[in-house]
Image (cartoon, rainbow, N blue to C red; front, side, top):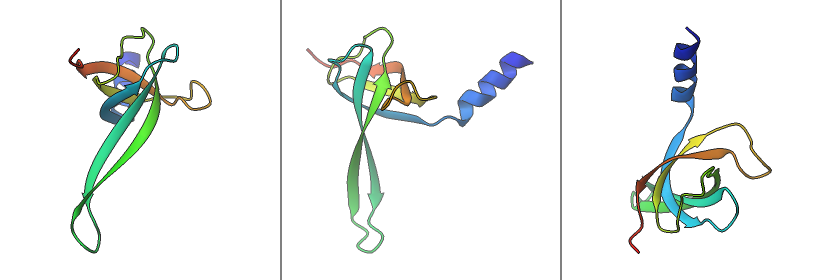
Length: 92
């Protein structure tokens, strides 16, 4: 019963996919998430980006990686996201 409730909690949390900009801090990665939407008046597609600080417990993220992040409780002053997995490794 309890395991089922925990799975339900995770489905309510937001998940985003973005590119790692920086991972020089210990167990922290800076993720850039882009979203595209049509302009309300001109109907041209606009790209907006936002940076998120995400917790990376194993320090596996490298700049250029595409990662999936999950919303979580506040970990520090700026970190409210956790890296779930690396979708695509950066080419070295």
